[in-house]
Image 1 (cartoon, helix red, strand yellow):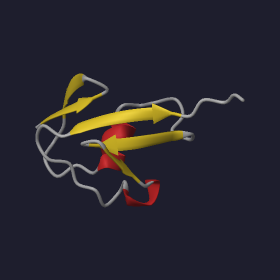
Image 2 (cartoon, helix red, strand yellow):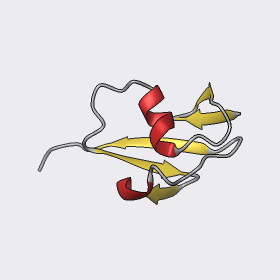
Image 3 (cartoon, rainbow, N blue to C red):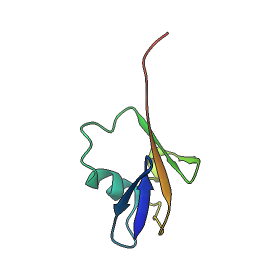
Image 4 (cartoon, rainbow, N blue to C red):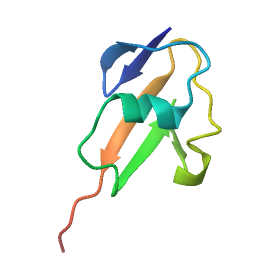
Length: 67
């Protein structure tokens, strides 16, 4: 199935969780990020139980320090 992550297309197996999809991206550090699925922020505690469907759109939002 096709999933858009930060406007780039990726192919994943069906019934993959949001957490597994992010792990497959092999990001250096997932602390300090938030995930929006189809424009809705998903709490980190729900990543494992949130199952993706074809053509879902994920946006990875990184925390920025500053004042």
